[in-house]
Amino acid sequence: MDRLRRTQSGTLNNVLSPSRLARVLENEAMNGNEAYTIDELFGDLRQGIWGNTSDADMFRRSLQRAHIERLAYLMSNEQDAPRNRIITLYTGFTRVDVSQSEIRAVVRAEMEEVRDIAKSGAKVKDARVAAHYKDIMARIDAVMEGKG
Image 1: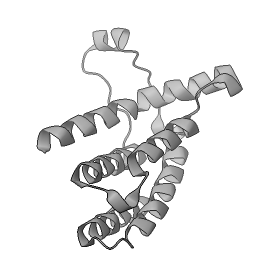
Image 2 (image 1 turned 90 degrees about the horizontal axis):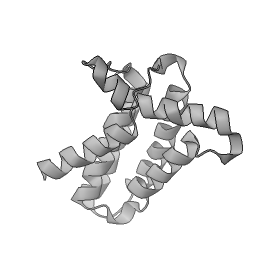
Image 3 (image 1 turned 135 degrees about the vertical axis):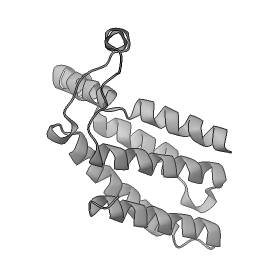
C-alpha cells in the first residue's frame, strides 16, 4: 500500500507542481479560449479523484489524501528551486512566486469545492468512508485557517 501511496503522491506532485501550473497559466494567457485552462485541469482532477464518494475504497481514499496534501502544500509553501542548474535547462522548470500568482486563489477555490464533496461523503453509511471524509474536511479547515 505504501508503494502505491508514494506513486499516487508523486504523480500528483508532478501534475500540480508550481512550475507546471505556471506554464498552464502562461498558456492560457497566450492562447486564450484555445488553451487548456487551470480551471479545466483542476476540474478534471477533481472529477477523477473525488467523483463518487459512496464507493471510495482504500486506494481512492489514499489518492484523495494525497490530493489534499498537495493542495495544502500549494497553499502554504513557495516553489522549491532545483538543486542543480542543469535540471532547470532540461526539465521545463519555470520559476514562479506562488503567493503572487493566481495559483493560490485557484487552489483555495478547489479546496472549497472538495470540502463540499467531502461534506456529502461524510453522510455515507460506511463508517470508515464517513470518517475519511470527516478527516478530509478537518484537514481542509486547518489549511484554510492557516494551521495546516
